[in-house]
Length: 354
Image 1 (cartoon, rainbow, N blue to C red):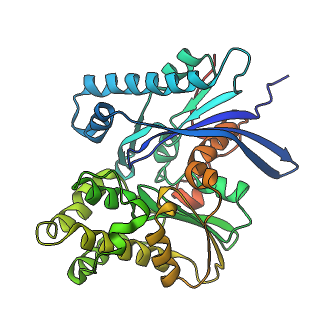
Image 2 (tube, rainbow, N blue to C red):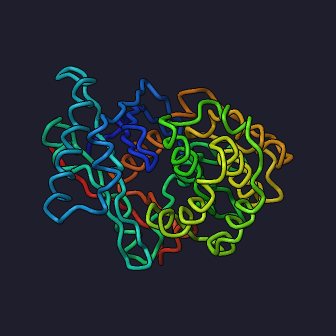
């Protein structure tokens, strides 16, 4: 008889480099209806040295890159081992890893944080490498969270994630559609970092700033915003297209004004992306804690913007990756062609059984 998987730890390392999110979750299925519970969760901040390595991982040699893959896997495993014991282990671990290269047009995506190392160090079956099959099938390999939106959060008309990038998912003509919208925390944190802050707490600095009209206009003309989905963003696009525009305005404008303009840009792009028939929008991710961003979005979009409990805000992505790992172990599709543009729905993820 095959093993029944129910309890799993989801692991997420986002592009904003805040740290490693861990969520220990339990799933139940009655017929086709799924329910979940986040039993416990935490974020393990990166130490400065690791944050620096990850921020510049695209510049590493092949050997250095491979070494960082192993090092990050061991770090993740160490944090998980602090949670578990021989008498209390999850059925599986599902680790997204940290994205370094994401170029689906070249059939290329890489995430580091070795799943083999995690499995070996924890003694728990580990699922990783969720994106590469979809990219190999001609898809964007992103976003992956929408199948979780579909099966775990179907009571909302649309689900918005405010992470390093903002992305959205919703049903259109009976199928789930999802895409990246714009940079979010990646852009905001980039400006906050310039004055020694990890982020703009509650958006207080942005709220005190003034709009820079020319910057807003330039950002809004970026080609990406005029493309039809499926479409996705990566750090390389941010550095090649978004950052050069932003940097032109840094010297002559205050941090507050730059942040205010970015918030207006992000909120405007989100408001333009929400479908007209959506009434209830769930907002999660670190950006959902940015009160000024939420207020600005609420002013630009007329529907009911719902910000849930703190566990769901902070750990929805880790929760969903645990769910994706569960689907993979069950041999069920965990990636939707309607979202990524792949030639078919697929069941992605490498599995290390121990």
